[in-house]
Each structure stands twice: as C-alpha cells, then as structure tokens.
Amino acid sequence: DTAVSQTPKYLVTQMGNDKSIKCEQNLGHDTMYWYKQDSKKFLKIMFSYNNKELIINETVPNRFSPKSPDKAHLNLHINSLELGDSAVYFCASNPAGGREQYFGPGTRLTVT
Amino acid sequence: QQQVKQSPQSLIVQKGGISIINCAYENTAFDYFPWYQQFPGKGPALLIAIRPDVSEKKEGRFTISFNKSAKQFSLHIMDSQPGDSATYFCAASSGGSQGNLIFGKGTKLSVKP
Image (cartoon, rainbow over all chains, first blue to last red; front, side, top):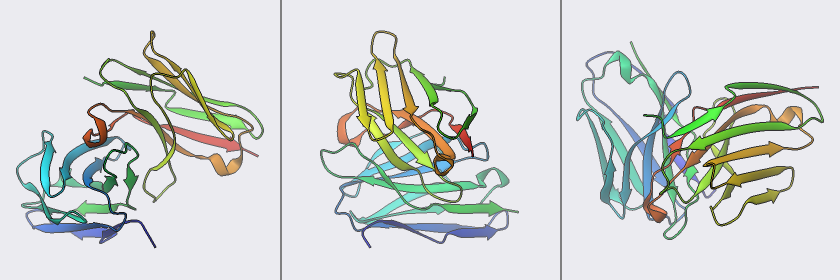
C-alpha cells in the first residue's frame, strides 16, 4: 500500500526514558513533517524536513531531535521523556510543488 | 496567538441536515486553506481545500466558502450522514509546498440518525 506509516502505534514508557518514533512514506514526497496532537486534539507543527534538510523547527524542547536518513524517512527521537510529552504524534508528507499533506496513522505516546 | 480560529467546538446535526463549520484567520500571507477530517484513532485526512483566488469550491456533499475580505472560510456538509461524524479541522498555510499547516482547534461533529 502507498501511504505514510509510523511505528510504533502505541508507546508507553516511564519518565526519564529515551524513545524513538519512526516514519516512512513511499509516496515519493520531498517534504515530511512531525505534528503533535495534545489531549484536547489540538494539532501543532513540530518540525519539517525537505530532502533530508531541516526547514521548520518550531518552539520545541531540544529533547526532541528529528533525523532524516533519506527523503522517505523522518524519525523522531525524544530524550528524558516528561509527563507533558504524552500526546499523539503524527508524521505527514507532501509532494514537491504540492500543498496536500498526507498524514500517518499516529503514534500515541503515554509517559507514566 | 491563535492564527486560525474555528467554531463551533462541537456540533450536533440531524441526518440529512446541513453542517456548517466556520474558521477565521489573521495572517494575510496564508494562501492555502484545507479542511481535514479525523476519525477516532486515525490520522487527519484531507477532505477539500481552497485557494484565495476563488470564493467557493464544491466536491460532492462538501463545499468550502471563502471570503477573502473578511478573512473567513467555512465548510458546509450537505445531506449530513452518520458516517460524517468525526472531528473536522480547518487549516491554513503559506510558503508554498514547504509551508507547514496552522490548524484550528477542531469541531467535533455528531450526526444523529
């Protein structure tokens, strides 16, 4: 299937741990994003990459570090997890010259 | 500062009725206005989008109305169905294909049979 995929779908971990979320798109898109959706369902941009280069880095704690090994993958590593990091994280992508963003299924992160 | 304001927060409509969700924006640099539909446990899915050079766009039962001078746009869902029950987000962006989306806070729509 052509899509944006994320792993894992659920992630439960304790405060202070380090975890990673992976995103892959096989749509041939050039730009990829990470969004955070909080408990009130508010969606907010965190990062965007274009062809492996960071474009947007919103006001996000430096405990969050995105990495793009190639233009089909954008991973999110989170250090020293805090309770407030609990949220659903969505990866998205859009094609070169296109505005339509396609979202992955999300990763629900719960920090206890 | 919230750049895209969405209302209402929740909406209950009878089957067959018209659902209307409104959004207002502040940044005149925005030049792309999509609507996303999100079902529980799923990612947002693009429903319909409009650019500011047109005042209306229709796709099936879904219509966007756009008022550039008022900096407002709205989603109309005609003949609303129970399967339309979801959370709807308006969004706006600038900066071309590398611009990130600024989302409204969402509207939870319930269509009663």
